[in-house]
Amino acid sequence: MIVKIGVCGAAGKMGKAILEVCKETDGVEIGAAIEHPESSEIGADAGEVAGIGKLGIEITDDILSVSNEIDVMIDFTLATSVIQNIDKCISSNCKMVIGTTGLYDKNHARIKSAANEIAIVFAPNMSIGVNLCFKLLEMTSNVIGKDADIEIIEAHHRDKKDSPSGTAIRMGEIVADATERNLKDCAVYGREGNTGPRDKNTIGFETIRAGDIVGDHTVVFATTGERIEITHKATSRKTFATGAVKAAQWLGDKQKGLFDMQDVLNLK
Image (tube, rainbow, N blue to C red; front, side, top):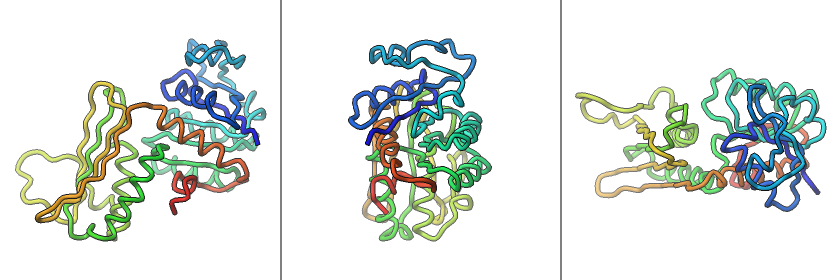
């Protein structure tokens, strides 16, 4: 079965990586490439923009003109664009893989409601390795989470807009759920000054933004006498692109519903 994929944000860093992975993946065909109307790459060949050779696919700003020609749209664009693209994909019964982070509660609610009409894979991180770490975090939290001081440290490139990262927040949610806490109540985002002794029930977050770091995440479980650290380091955006394309293929026989990478990787 050939899955025809459309790529939103095709001229961006992630879009280019996704186009490259699509070209390298059996059972996948690039069907469309979309950019915002102000992009200087409108009308250009998507493959040439991505540096993978001519594809014969022109970058367009009209998602409705191409959404009927593809099976799955992969979207790593901004929150406002994602919500607009959801409506257009619903109108043409096009499935979606959404990797955008920094979304508000209302955006999450829209994605959830859209899944009543089309099939969607939505995850804060599409990396296979990160999603294995999510499973390890759940296991570790179930065993020692209530006895440990838990800190989450993440690092990304200087241009990343949201902080903490969506991956770090998801890690915090997994730990909080496993230890019967609500992350909104127990999260501490950075410390400064005389903060006093550490509150045992808190989950701390530390954020680094520097250079061209693709994405590093470490969760520390510290008890008296020992420390467990679960770490993932990404060195290429192709890591996330590979997971997104895998998710698009997995959606092949799904008609509607909301899924995540744990579903795609059969980790639930």
